[in-house]
Amino acid sequence: MGKNIWENVYYRLNDPIEIQLAILYTIRYVGRPVPDIELKHFMLSATSVAFLDLMEQLDALLKQNHMKIVLRDEVECYDFAPSGREMIDIFEDKIMVSVRESLRACVDEYYQRKAVEEQIQAKLVPLDRNSYTLQLHIKEGKTTLLELSIFAGDRARAIAMKKQFEADPIGFYTRVDALLREEETDQ
Image (cartoon, rainbow, N blue to C red; front, side):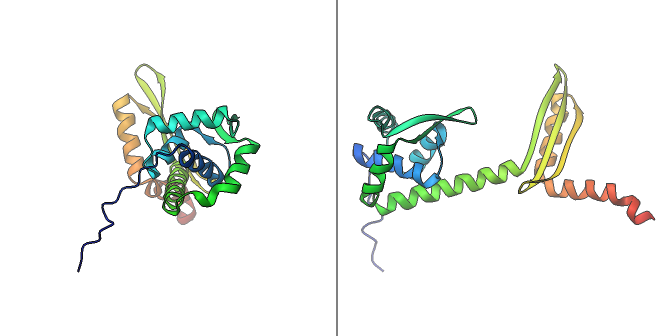
């Protein structure tokens, strides 16, 4: 079996227009305004663009009025300006297929992971210098299955409780549900 001569070929995304098109493509694929940190994550994770080149092209898109900054949930996000939407409509097919696929995969993976993280949450809430409560949330879609705030004591104990919950949140929910249903089985 011969060695694949293409396995070490490395395409560097460094053309300013290619970078701008990839940025606009990402915003289009997400389908809504994209926070700065997320857009940078997608571009840096999915492409070989250099950080300084990315920053330069983000600035260029804003100055050329192809993009604008909008507030979404009190977070500054990048969105299309009309000329940016027109630009990506016309030139989307000029973006390399591998770049488009990589960006789509990165965006999909990020939002899938974020959705899972939002379904199960455990937060430490300080009451004073030496005591904490632990707030637990388990959701399935938009339905809240469990919402619980429990006094945890000191920080070390609160952290241990948080780790225990995060290790098996569904098991925790099942045990709480069973405890609350004991009376049904006793009758």
